[in-house]
Length: 399
Image 1 (cartoon, rainbow, N blue to C red):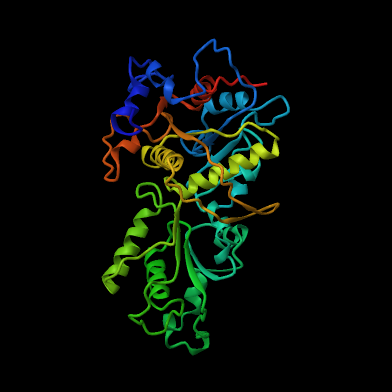
Image 2: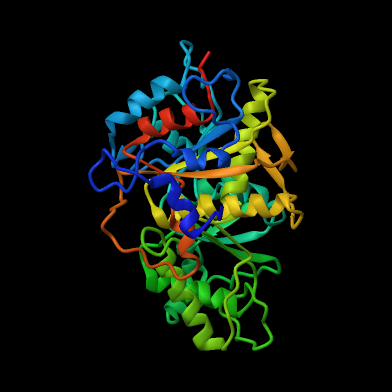
């Protein structure tokens, strides 16, 4: 059975008890072969140790703005024991990038006390890219950018506003405010998110790209390929993808060449799910759960990011098992010292769509890359139903 296209429709056959929802909340009998751990109600083989993990989106799944979604409280009661410890590995994956992960963890504290190590922002995978941590990096976005960059491991971040102050041509007649041009032989650009003043950010980032990190110097045609650009959250609808499109087109208009990204992260990128799986495995190791993690369940409300990303990662996992595997080997700087991404990977990443957020069953989806990847494996009314579904699929009995 195909993983894309009509093959995914099997998850939604039959009458749905939820208005506007194209299927029931549990897997149909025809899909059981796709979930090796599932043997239905009354199964003889039950598990008290998890061989799976949850990747929860936050906005639209657990909260709306600052208001908790009621089903989230019920779901969390099923996910922890009497001591408040999680019964399964859980990572909260958000495309937000304008704050520290500790702040996002604090925002969830009204639901459950969680560690910042369980929270993954769109920029979290930057911890792996140690080769840029010692470089001077120009950071763009909103929020406490210097704090975010330093928390990720960058030693020499500089903001757009700071660079603006260093550019002598911004005030050509005031010689007292003309410091030396920023000079760096080892420079890169990190796009954390959408800036407030697009025109300033676009101009200065383009200047840095055209001059290889020497803004104010003449533009040389030979400066290609340009200095590295690392970008977070390329979602065109809800992220800063539109800003990136503007940057790409301005660069191409000036140079006639394509702007190339060293790395793209944030859902639906594969890198985000690889790093999330790394965090899941780290939790399992810390809790001494010896069962190998076989399946990741990505629970979200957005077809274009949560569902597409999970299905794309599932396709990567399946191709990996057939031999066409390229392993990501990168160092990760965490709170307890360096670590390496495990070469072990899950067998599956299943997409679970909830109907408490931006998802609208009556909205037409126009995705030019691969329409099959926006078909969720399961559709459920809310996160509580998602937890029930996964526990049943995995024959999991909380101990």
